[in-house]
Length: 200
Image 1 (cartoon, rainbow, N blue to C red):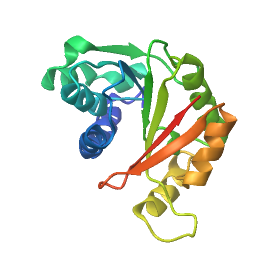
Image 2 (cartoon, rainbow, N blue to C red; image 1 turned 180 degrees about the vertical axis):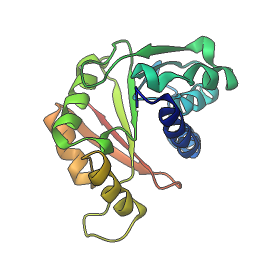
Image 3 (spheres, rainbow, N blue to C red; image 1 turned 180 degrees about the horizontal axis):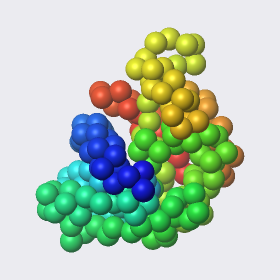
């Protein structure tokens, strides 16, 4: 998509719309009172972090993604009046993750990746995370018993388009363990995404 900006914009605007509700519900369901700095790895146009910063006036944020994916992040931050508390940093989470954050947020990132790349980006987060910090992964969790959820449909789409997959909570626990992390909890949001929390 870096070579096709019109397609990239359609893709990111679609994810922006999908993420509005997930971001709002995350801000309501997860307590960020004791946190200081959220780094949104693969944050795209920044809607989730913008909503967190609007609710929690003490938070700072960093939107970190490939350069072409950040095209409208500044617009989002200005729209939510949080641009003075959030940096926009281009980069690739598979190569490195910037330091300074006590929360790393990854929404709809790991489901685009195979297990090895998922572990790689989680390990980069773990290495950059401040002591006592936490990692929050927002994904659709599928059931261990094969019962139908919308994530089953997305699972097939990810397999075909990216080589990624949707996962069970046990799958995420194994990824966290391989990355040197411990899965500490999971919160199902009304929109169908789950916030999967981990730490060192």
